[in-house]
Image (tube, rainbow, N blue to C red; front, side, top):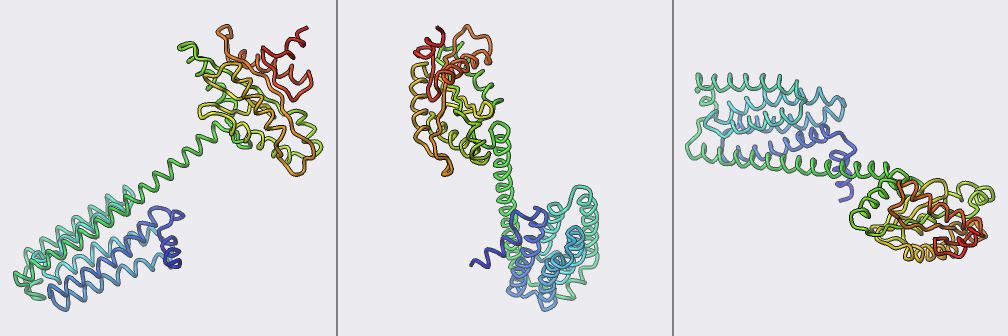
Length: 374
């Protein structure tokens, strides 16, 4: 089973261009459909020549499959396969299994379908014109010379209807499988495209190191929160954090350990926020947590919880001392003219926290702020 799965992936996996996958499917599927057509000819008793022609059709599809495996020239193999199928194989089957009285004309539809699906626009148009003219000539010749097919096989009414019914079944089954395979392929490609678009979107708004949103997204998000505040007066608070003495961490332990601290602190923030809160890396070791609907007191309480969690956390085995953070809390006020002015209030409180001992959170109700003002 594992070997079969590996072989299926080799022939139809996403690592292959879609045109190559379809060629593999068409050649192997054509061989399988030809086996069914051969059985139909045996059951409907179309004669030895007709059965041998069906067997030749099986061989043709297998040759087409292995030709590409050997030459690796996909476009040449596609053109050769279509020409051989529509110019030689199908017309030969048409004349050897009963002509217009048989179900063979239904197979011509499959030849045209393969042409549409396997070629680009310009060669497809040329090939369709050539094939259509050729089919018209085949039908015209069989009309003028019905004795050609009759000489090979004279079909009874019972055999004629049986052959048409079985050929219709084979073509209908083959077409259904083909359409389903294409639909699944398109669905997978669409899903993969959506995943890639989502990844690109995340890359455009997120910081690659920390996994938090970047500064550009942060400013837009705060702007939307301010607009909502003006409409509903719903509170909007932010917390600006800074990792204490982060430069010393880089100097003492190296930048890789410093990166671990950034990622670890960001992880604490992400786990500590609500679904509609936003964590963003503002720059360097500075992060901002945006809390829509939260009062300044609520934001301060959350900031204290985060500060204590960081103090107890271990971000790297190489660090032998606690990592701490300082923070400043601000709530939006209609007097602020811009997003930057709003952020600057939290930044001022953060500066006060760092100037008065670090590892603390400062807001407008803090004693540290009052002492600093004095």
